[in-house]
Length: 173
Length: 397
Image (cartoon, rainbow over all chains, first blue to last red; front, side, top):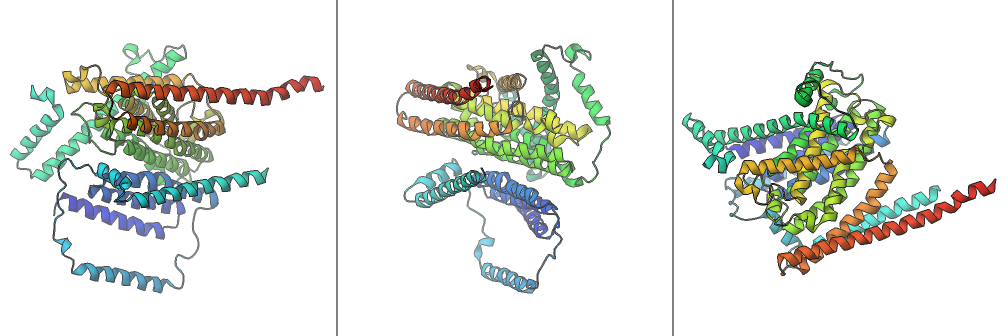
């Protein structure tokens, strides 16, 4: 067991515990803050995998934008940020069965996998992951089409958001 | 002699040799050396932070035609230590109904988000925490943690003024992040890398010459990100008392205050790194890494001084004006500049460095001229719209 594995196990434990706390805590703001801990843990996992760009993008987008939006939504909508209802409904056993089956299936699938004992191939010297990612995103034989489709989708969403906000403003006058 | 050429690495090697002779396993000694490195960097920054209190108070006094602290020690240099003792012995109050953990965590996160930034600052070619190849994005990511700290402070204090201050600050931070990212991409395009060290190495001509507009937009966005005047609505004392840190006393307030000062100094540093050649100053950096570090800190202090100059000269802007300024002016301008820079950079890729620099400068000047013309027309139109109504008032009576 080396340092990286220790860090991985520690971060994994933090992610799991905070993920459970997101759904069990009664205070909605605390739930959002625990979600941030979970997302930050995932960013650390990316960093451990030498995916620096993904790790930083995870923090910028998920913590800097989405989680902040969650907190705003909670603060601006509910007068009491405390959830008083029951925490599970009558079909909880169905969910438990599905979760157990999924976990069992994954365990069974990974049981015979040989990758656990192999160590990852080293990164060649002078390899720039950001450079490779940038080239792959605009290369015609790689991911240029999905990249463009995602860009158009986001642009459409942006225009849609502006349109919705704009018409509301006109009506209120 | 080798020590002065590369002080950090030779110290690390000396420590590694010492620890190995004591029988420490290699992974533990590597961890310990990293830890000591972080400790030294953070301590150095905190010591600079103490002096920044004095610098800020002295400079604001000069701008406001006062003397500033001048009683304790020569030029009032001992004043910040007296301030710290005062902050430490003040009563530590947690307000009734506050969310205790969130309330106490917020000042720590706030200062931490600033100290995190120093991990990627290249003080010299060989003195840096880590040379991340996603440096520009990392700055934004650390800013996201700062945003989070402000929300936590505003919500955890159980005070409506604190919450309003936090809301305002987050609205500003989230919107001014957009032009900031766009302008940070311009040095990235020019240098061909997002790493801070690579950007500094690429600046044979300072980027403030190649991209003056980007430098100005970055400074404006940085001032907004810092929450300083004219964008200090988060702590507009005449409206919401002190904003998100209204309920904090003693050293908890001190952490916010220290974080704010160090944040301004840090963004002065990033302004220097991205646009003023970082540790490079007409070949002075070749004398040795420590000289280079002093050059960078001096440039950071200059950036900090410009930020203070703006802070104590310009009045506070109303929030709708500020957001309109960002979304309708800065953001389109930043993206237009980004497109123009990318285009010109690609077109002049194979020509000589002088033609490249000239092309970039002409592009920027043209952009500035267009902006001035648009602003002039807008101003004329607004005046034409408003003036008839102003004139009508006396005639109707």
